[in-house]
Length: 334
Image (cartoon, rainbow, N blue to C red; front, side, top):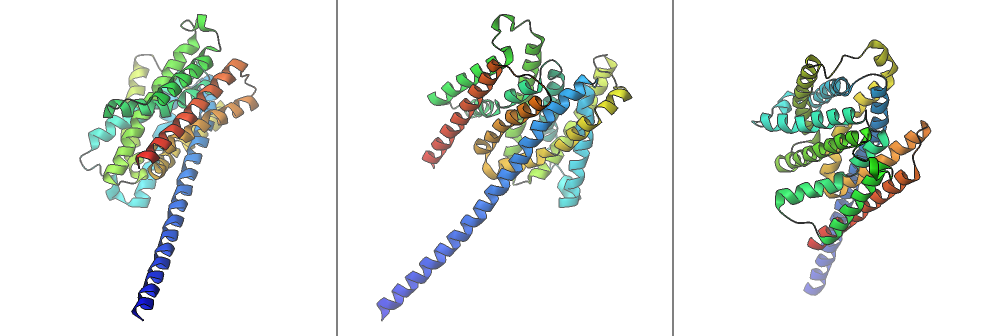
């Protein structure tokens, strides 16, 4: 009798454990799907952003004022959403004002100034393929901070990605590399990507360490970074490096400006997606940005050479392979 009772209890506990495990799996899968959706929204926004910014700059709005036009309203909108969602108390920095200002300036001022100024010399397609270097740049930053050398396979992927980027930037014309104005623009775009890698590491640290929401980290960093954007634009104007755009240029770029302001909000979905999937898996989605921008560019009549296409393919393959290697290593360590 006791044997049957114990057996029945074991069966009951087993079934309950399986039900609980199944429910946990459903919750986990749902969270993963939400994170994937957040990141898809982000890369779609970025894919549209670069062609829009290139058109706005070509229409006569310089990079300084385009950054102001994009992120001052964007930061105010994110802050308003934070107050509505989490209340006024969530807008407190809790003695981390300097950190949020510093990294917000690097992320939002650095990313946008270098992007919008650089894209004036380069192209939207180049900007997005350079942005796709983010996974490898993130790995380099992680290695520097934690003093851990990447493994041999990752080094090979880095070299392949670098080769692909060089092909994209030079279009196979290596003799005129340093003389090209596009080269200057591409260096600025690479600097912009480095700025965003640094900001992403900071944002991910704040979210995981203090369990703050992605919305809160985005709002605080963007609002404080906005002050730097305004200050730099004023100084650049006084020194003659920036000029207030004419109404004709603003009207010609009104759709681009709308797109840029709206896509400023995708930083919320970026931080939320990284929080859910982690930096290693999340940053892989950046590889979709060049695809989106290239498709838009083709529809706009831009010509992409065979060498550039090969360079893009090499870079994307290297980045995807590197991400697979990193995930396999992570699973082995777990």
